[in-house]
Length: 64
Image 1 (tube, helix red, strand yellow):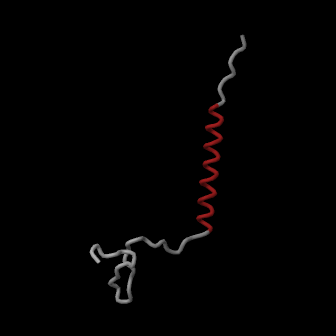
Image 2 (cartoon, rainbow, N blue to C red):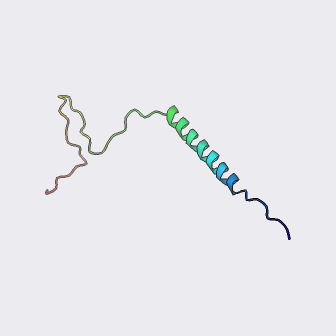
Image 3 (tube, one colour):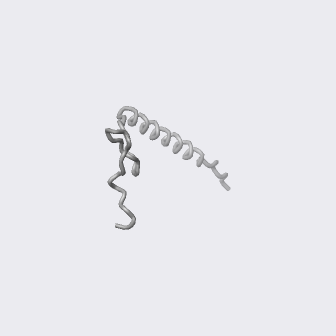
């Protein structure tokens, strides 16, 4: 009877870990090379010239 070969499943896990690391490194490199000036937040108050802020246009009154 033949002896069973040792499992090489761990190699797949190591390969997946390395591939995931490369993908994350690529993502962060691209993000670093393409900075975003400002990310608008939904519901945030936009500054006005007098500095008080205003309600965003996306918010609708509950009872029109």
